[in-house]
Length: 441
Picture 1 (cartoon, rainbow, N blue to C red):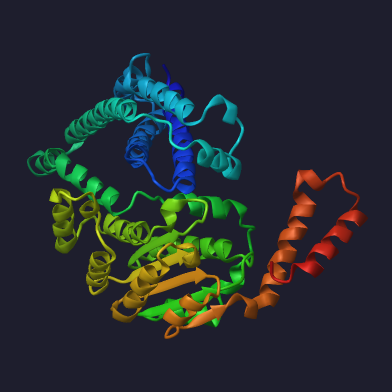
Picture 2 (tube, rainbow, N blue to C red):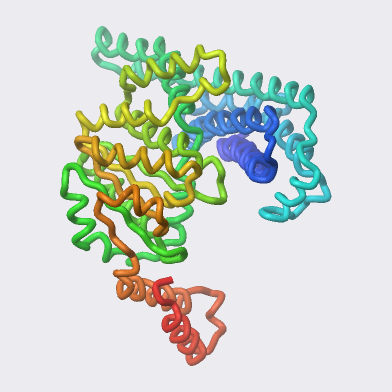
């Protein structure tokens, strides 16, 4: 089996996992009394996706550099991909699970239609059957984690042969291997903080972004003041369809590059998406911000580790999660020693809005070296809670928005293959009509 076949096998399992997760989200959105198996399945498959992501990285590295070391790395992955191997078994298990969750009569249905069907028939997965399936998935995940551990050990051994200062460097490398349980602990804390990966939303938003649009915001005085001040808060408000999410993705991309190139503090972002219930949970939002910051720090504050231990030993299922007060305290602690930049899109989509608004207000008032930029619709509770902070209304920049819209329309009509067949005079008519009626949307 060549590297491409191994990569394709891992990607196939990732795609199957994503499909099952999407169905689980539909169940969570459609039924009120959620069974224990639903949350367990969602959590288990999210963990599986993280493991598969690391295996895909190993396969990709081997594909790019097909030398003696990487051939050895591929041997383990090939065994896992063969019939009866953990990767092959995972794929079969996920496809079976999808069929149980989505009967054949639902084929091709998604979104609101699928949620309507879910509401009509409810959860049909028996508890014992779900428990057995979860047990099998845990066994497969353990095998895959072991393969990753073996791969890390092989790399460390190979690196140690290349070191010139054997006495000092080899001890350091093998100490990293001995501390692999500590790495597992770090991953556990990150997963405990939040299972949501905001990169998915960022990537989707950037795909729809037209080059050159939103550049006006990068040079406007409101953004410049926010960026240059050591402790600042800016609320970006706009009506639905005014382009807040695409604008935020541009800012995230710009600030992320700026942070990495200039070593300019710590950066975190998040998208609240009405299509994904997990992104609307205040704990997932706040936890994801803290997880991103801790990941870049490569360490966890003692107060956070202590909170993790308390939740881990708690007998109550509700005690196994952290709370907003703890996350607030830890973020303020980090911001007392490092410059922290936070961007959040779609604050109005968040559930328990009072809690998350209080969270951001507290950070904005107490964080020593913290820059916060949030976007949302103009709603009364948000307006009241954030009244002490600067605000920029997108409606006030309608001329800039109209220019962006005109640029986007011209580009689509001029370059998109779907419109090439239209006569130029008809294209101009469409262009003029759309631009005149856009009004910032």
